[in-house]
Length: 70
Image (tube, rainbow, N blue to C red; front, top):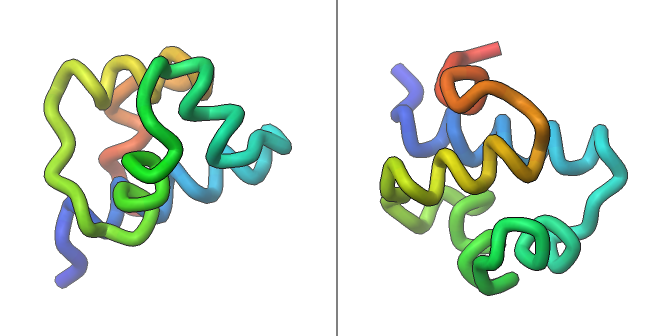
């Protein structure tokens, strides 16, 4: 079974790439650090609900869409 952290990581990366955003660009829109985004995409961070919301808003998706396996 894939962990929710890895599902979130994969979804953030895939959606970011689909939208042609760099990690730096996403970080800027979210007002988060680029290395934090990188850590998230590698499954190295436990992300708070607040930051899930920031990332979802920046990617223009519903927060739950970042948490479902595709």
